[in-house]
Image 1 (tube, rainbow, N blue to C red):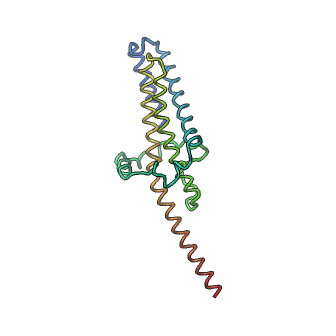
Image 2 (cartoon, rainbow, N blue to C red; image 1 turned 180 degrees about the horizontal axis):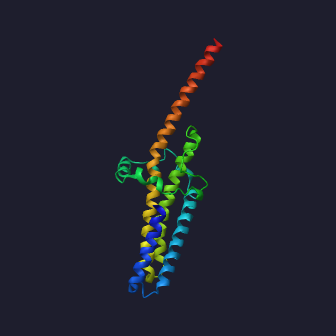
Image 3 (tube, one colour; image 1 turned 135 degrees about the vertical axis):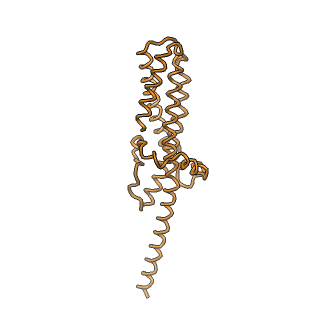
Length: 203
């Protein structure tokens, strides 16, 4: 679904500009196709750069669990469920390679250090996608106006694609928080049991 949306959108944008050449100042068909490919590649590069910036430039504490800056609100949960996120979230590829931490599955669910890292990476990833959406439109602003009917639609498609990833990452955060707290409770019970056993042995 994810790649189909990208390819189909590029084809539609190119087709519209070829059929109605007056909207782009009379570009030849091959110039319209090339412009779509170039601007799409540029937007992808911007997305990758923003993912790097979000993870390695901004303070890590902004994205750690408990930070008010990344708190998931109740209305968000309701919205994600209303758009049927459970049905399509697994069809959107996970791009954790940009930050060397993959979030397509929880590899160590019983390790709270790992879960906390996962939460931080998810928050950072969502922020990176938001930056990608913003700066793609900034890229539109510096492109010659004759390409507006190519650059602007590509930026909107990029915004839609990035919003899917943001929703998935935000949707998973409450579940990760619940997992973290369950691990804490289990650890507390284990410590209490060990403490009781130690006292019994001493007596």
